[in-house]
Image (tube, rainbow, N blue to C red):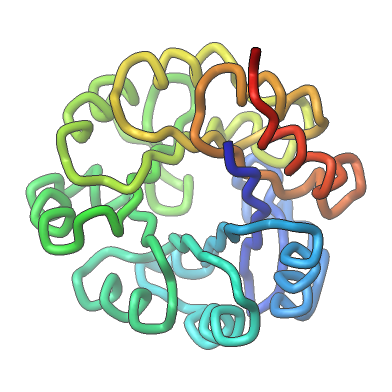
Length: 241
C-alpha cells in the first residue's frame, strides 16, 4: 500500500479545511515546494495535490504552484480540483502530473468522463467524495443524490488509474477513517481504491492496509505531528501474514 501525503492549495499555500468547509481553514506552509521536498525526504513516492481554489470555481487556479512542485521535486504526482474539461486534463499532464483526479465532472457528465478515460487510459483517477452514502461535488459545496456504491460500480469498467474515496465527515478531524465504507467499496469494485479522510495514527494505516486498499492519503495528522511519515510509510509497506 502507498502512503500518500497531501498538499491542499489555497492562494498558493498549503492548507487544510476542516470537513471541507472553506471558512474552517488552517494554513501550514507558505512554500508548497519546500513541503513537498520534506515529504520526499521522508520517503514518500507519491504526492496528492488538491487545488481547493480550483475546486470551488470550477477551473484550475494554482497551476503555477503545481508546476513549481513538479519541476522542483522528483516524485510522482496526482492532482485534482477544478479539472472539468479536456484542456485542463492536458494542461495538468503537460506540467508533470502523473494522474489527474476528476470528481465533479465525472459525476455530472459521465459520458464525457468515459470518453476522457478512453483518451487518457490509466491517467485519470475518479474522485468520489461523500457525506454518508451521497456524493458531494464542487469542492464539497454541493451534495448529489447519487449513491457512492452505484456510481463506483458504473465507473468500474473504465480504464481508471484508481478511485479515491473521501469521507468528508472524517476529513481534517483526525478521528480515524471510515473503515466500514472503505471496505465496502474495496469489495464492490475491481479498481484500486485509495482512502482519504481521517488517517491520524499508525493503527489507521495498518487497518486500511489490511482492508486491501491501494493507498491511503494523509494530511493534517502529518502537518500537526500526530503521524510520522517515515513510520507511516513503513507500516503501509509491511506485508500482512
